Image (cartoon, rainbow, N blue to C red; front, side, top):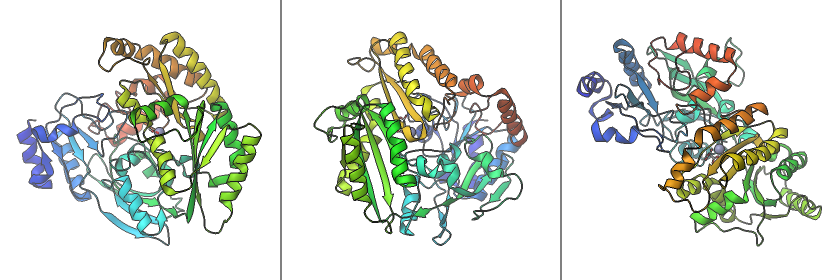
Length: 477
Ligand code: MLT
Ligand code: ZN
């Protein structure tokens, strides 16, 4: 169907400002990593759940394929249309209401287009804390976070976003509204249907609103940067620090020297807070409840004993919010620093904790054989067993150069070797970034065939016409 015919179908539902054509649609046609350049005849921007439902009914009646679109921060091209020019984009950016806040029950009912930052702000305004933390919080939207089952830097204590959801509202591919916006902690009423849509990347329906769980707002917090020998020592520290401080440990992020060097190189405001060079660093963060006093002193004593025993090399406990922010800035800008450095190959892997150091060791050996001189920047959520094992070309390779092309041409064998190693060690090739269009063939290769068949049957049952985000996650099943 041509753009004007589509315009005539959808403008009466969402109004003239609710549809975008031509160059206005361009920002919705490319993913933020610029891996995929798609083409869409029309972007539809509903304002309400009822409008989303009406749009989906029209799509079902006319066999129009659609791509749900949030803040466009997917790492896997999950929100980008293909190049055929037949898939409309449905942007949730105008569904931005905070429908209700319940400080007593600790729940927040928000619409899909709210940015993560605005959700956290709404929780803070109610004297509560919404414990999902991502570097992209200013632009990513909660509907996208839910659709990809987002992780981030507080999973160790609070789990992935799935564990923060009590209720969901979803528009099904036929336009029916599934209303499960319940604010209940306990609700054992048959299959937990809403879970199907969390992590489905918009292939089964469009999430329009959610009831989220808030936690208590901490009275104080402690942020520290620890210098350490490497991943093995880091994981040993995790065990001891959890024994000492239990669930108070909310963040435990690993950064090898290669990642920190890259961040310092590309962001002049980042300084290594230690005088010496160290092989690796850990960012630790604990929110502190007011009733537990003396935790700062206990943590300082703990770290002193660790240094004394040569289990860690050094540690700096932030003395102010501003100093804590500099530690966070360092961690959160590692991906941006790697982008500024030029092309890189990303591997978002997770492993059982007792296999993580072996993965890193053997990964280095693979790299040395398959891509000599390349730099592995394997950082991330060590406490969750999740490393962003990203690989950059050798130092000095310029963006756009022939050497960079040669590096990129090794992508397939490198990824295959790394993902095969992950599978051998019992891990996952996609810990938190999802499948999108980037990892469809990896899913086929590594997922249990029975699980794949179940996914195919669910897809077929809910979206028999195959109109919801075609080409993503479950393709051709
Ligand atoms: C992160 O934890 O910083 C992100 O999930 C990203 C990445 O791979 O770069
Ligand atoms: Zn991450």
